[in-house]
Length: 157
Image 1 (cartoon, helix red, strand yellow):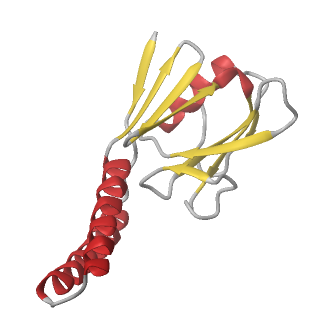
Image 2 (cartoon, one colour; image 1 turned 30 degrees about the vertical axis):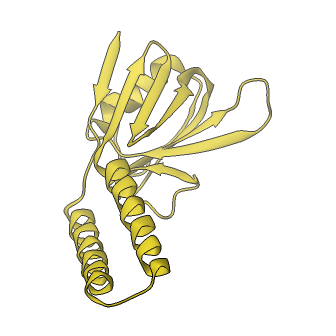
């Protein structure tokens, strides 16, 4: 069975992202209008490509659960997480205070999954933001019922 989850987006995130994009475009126009060397044009090309990839990663987010695998797609990248290896589920109000390095979210209302890597004692975290938080947590618990729940803002039935 395949389940799709839509990413959650905060309005403040869109405002900050739009402002940062506008500042970048203004500075890019200033470089184009000035008489600069080839290095500045190469730097401009790099910045434009970087902005394109960041926009792609930000606005093309998709979460799919197939059988016991969570597939998170963000831009040109994809991540597969075996939900049977989830050992802890937490929720946060801040995207920046989560323990993971990989944050696939456009919202401050995040869910962090701590997964034990297969055949290893190393643990890793992934942080995501989905609209259907309760349904997503319930689905994760189906695959990993022994996972430790540390929920503060989400109340499960």
